[in-house]
Every structure is written in structure tokens, then in C-alpha cells.
Length: 326
Image (cartoon, rainbow, N blue to C red; front, top):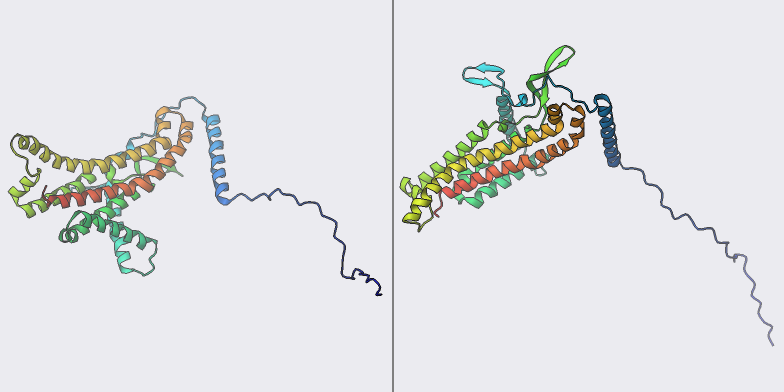
């Protein structure tokens, strides 16, 4: 009979270790991001500034004898050269012209397979203008009038964007710096003066009417102004309305661009300090400043490009409609 086998634990066998206490389940505190720090810093500065303005100036009205809120929109003549009065409106037109030509020539001479941001923006404007013309005109007309639509789009866009860059051009309300009376900073757009939108709209008005006369002839173009099949008393009623509507196109093109830009600039100024000047309460300007900043961002990000796009697309529609038959 064999004896029972005895199994002894090996030297390498170890007893189970004593269970360690559970680790803490509380997540480690994350450091504040840079963006959040900036936001909280701006909020703190705003609150502290509001308190300081309230303590220094108080709720009492302060008379303003130095600043006129409408003077920044006056076109003060700086230099008279013959019939041309050189003022800030002319300055902005010259800057827009130089920037429009300079940017387009610079991009045309430096076209790359991997475009930079400027080339990408110009190519996007080119594609949008190309679609606008080809969606509203035939191939021949689109090729002919594409340069005008594209130039108007870029020119108005640059004009609008320049209008949101503060520059020292207010020569009426000057600031005293070390005894020097220097022009104060302001935002100004050339098309907040109704003359510029009116001239641009007048050019479009003449262009599409000339194209319509060339395509249909004088009598044919007059007939094309009203829908086909209208006769008798309805013709006497509709024809004057159609004639009037063509002149209203001129006004609508000009007033839409002018009124939107002017209203935006007035709102920015009003919320950024003009209300405080009118009320004579300095702390109100600090209180409404965030609204002014919000309107500023909304205007320069959305409205500047939107108004340029609307002017370009209406130009394409009017040119294409001038050679079509109702």
C-alpha cells in the first residue's frame, strides 16, 4: 500500500496580501483654462470699473461742453484742391481703392497651390461672384459683367470693414496730448455718407438699362417692362407702376447700403458712450459698453459682408432681368 502524498507549499507561494484601503474617488482639480481666465478677468475689470465710475462721478448729471455726438459725422474739409474737397470721406475712398487694387494684384501675382488666408478669402469672393453672375445671366452676359459684380462686391466689403477700424480722423473734437491738440479716434465708413451708395447705385441703374435697351431696342425694352399678355386698362395701371419700380430700385440699392451702415455705426457710438454724453452720466457709458462691443462684433462680422453680398446679388439680378422677357 502506498503512503498518502503530502503537498507542501513551495517557497514561491505567498499568502494573500492584506487589502489596502480604497483610493479617493474625488477627481483632481483641473487648472483654469486660459480662455476662462481671460473671460473672468474682463468681467472683473468691468465690475471694478463700474464701481469706480459710480463712486467717482456718482448719480449726478455732469454738463458736457466739449464733445458733440454728431460732429464725428461732419465732413470737414481738410484741403481744397480745385473742385475737390479733401476730407475723411475722400480719404476712406482712396484707402479702399488702394486696398482693393493692392490685394487683388498681390493675390494674382502670388497664386499658390496651397493658398494662404488672403488668397483663400479672395478665391471665395471670386467663386461667390461667379455663381451670382452665372445664376442670373447667360454665359455671354455673365462673362461680360462678372468683373463689375466682383469689383463691387470686393470694393463695398473693404469699405465696410475699414469702417470698423478706429482711426484719428475726427478733427473737430481734438484731444490734448502733452499740449498737442490731436485728432481724436473714431470709426467711420465712406458709405455712411449717402453720396457714395447713391453713386454706386446710379452706375448699376445706368448699366442695366443700357443693357436692356441694347438687347431689346427702345420700343422692345419699354414693352418688356410689363408682363406679356397685359393689355387695356390693366396696362394703364401697371405700366406707371413698373416704371416707378425701376426708379425705386435706384433708391433701394442706395438707401439699403447707406441706412444699414449708418444705423450700425450710430448704435455702436450710442452704446459706447454717446448715451452717457446725452444724459450727462459718465458711468452709463461704462454700463452700456458691453452692448456696444456686442453690436460692434455683430456689425463687422455679419453686416459688413452681408450688405456687400446683397448689393452684388441685386446687381446681377437687375442686369439679368434687363435682357429677359416677362
